[in-house]
Amino acid sequence: MKRSVLVVGGAGYIGSHMVRLLIDSGHEVVVLDNLSQGHRAAIGDAELVVGDLMNTADLAAVFAGRRIDAVIHFAALIAVGESVVDPGAYYRNNVTGTLNLLDAMRNAGVDKLVFSSTAAVFGNPRTERLSEDHPLAPINPYGWSKRMIEQVLADMARAWGLNSVALRYFNAAGAHRSGQIGEAHTPETHLIPVVLLAALGLRNGLQLFGDDYDTPDGTCVRDYVHVCDLAMAHLKALEFMHRAPGAHAFNLGNGSGFSNREVVKVARSVTGRPIPVEIVPRRQGDPARLVADGRRARDILGWRPEYPELGSIIESAWAWHQSPLYGPFASPS
Ligand SMILES: NC(=O)c1ccc[n+]([C@@H]2O[C@H](COP(=O)([O-])OP(=O)(O)OC[C@H]3O[C@@H](n4cnc5c(N)ncnc54)[C@H](O)[C@@H]3O)[C@@H](O)[C@H]2O)c1
Ligand SMILES: O=c1ccn([C@@H]2O[C@H](COP(=O)(O)OP(=O)(O)O[C@H]3O[C@H](CO)[C@H](O)[C@H](O)[C@H]3O)[C@@H](O)[C@H]2O)c(=O)[nH]1
Image 1: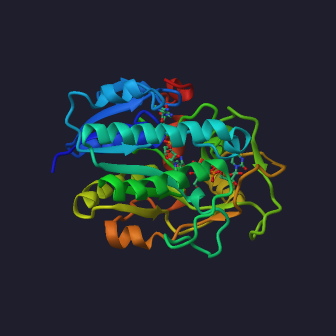
Image 2: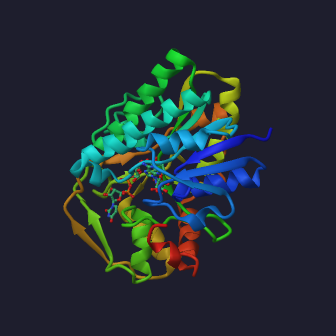
Image 3: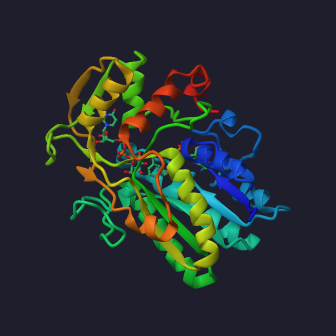
């Protein structure tokens, strides 16, 4: 069924892949983004309202005069290390900003939300793979900001009937098969793009944050999931909310963990370039290992990742970073 969807943070990395999928699937889209990290060019012909979650007038204006069936909310500050250094900015933007959005939704009578949560809500894992039943015990302000909103969503389901799905992504990576959109943050802090920028000679190699973790090779382990597979999970969540009221959460990962050293090795093989690595001290706030047990999303949402292999995820990101279209995205807007 055709839906009318507000995508908040839709000009960003994951949001722009969502916008593309919604349009390709025949849905109507309006994007709200402050372009602090987003790119106008990433959303093609979709309608863009430039506005900020911290400005309640911007929010009221985007809902006024539009029929919106559901909101997909990507807008946030996203860097784990930065959140340890500047927690206030993270709680303000991610928590207060989302509360403002929820108030505007309630005022406009919109009761469906898909929320970008994160594996960082779990903190240090007590089991090899993280299922939805694992305790939530974040170890950095970024993770706490998302954990708090998950609680807010549960409370608002009871208070006024908000229906929501929190999707806890593990590590998003890769780019759209068209080669037209992909990851481009300023500054770039995520491992795979940093490694690929080093392969291109646009950075002096990779600073690897710590090799003294309790993992097989001493470097952190993460579960990489293709950005287009994440977008597909949102489409399924959108339909799920129509048949399952209340607040729900799903973990989205492929269930395979790769150490930072393994990521560099696969990237060297995909790019055929030497990628120099310098070991530096640990970055604050990093859990040693985050790997998903994604069975619930597969069983209940029917989510089936199309690109589960790390090699193909990095290949798609490499194609994007080499594309002439990447250049204009290398700074925001
Ligand atoms: N990238 C990952 O690996 C990852 C993993 C888990 C969860 N997440 C979550 O997914 C979401 C999207 O991540 P991303 O990598 O696409 O990030 P991104 O920075 O590329 O996208 C976020 C977008 O939101 C916009 N934005 C930020 N604050 C805003 C505000 N106050 N008002 C309006 N717009 C605002 C930015 O301009 C940007 O376009 C985030 O909520 C993030 O926490 C990301
Ligand atoms: O230059 C770098 C960049 C990263 N790393 C390491 O690579 C691993 C992955 O780091 P990323 O910054 O790529 O990703 P995170 O796991 O810290 O966090 C990402 O995934 C999380 C979910 O797992 C969050 O939701 C978050 O938004 C998103 O930034 C970490 O061990 C990090 O220390 C380096 O060694 N050098």
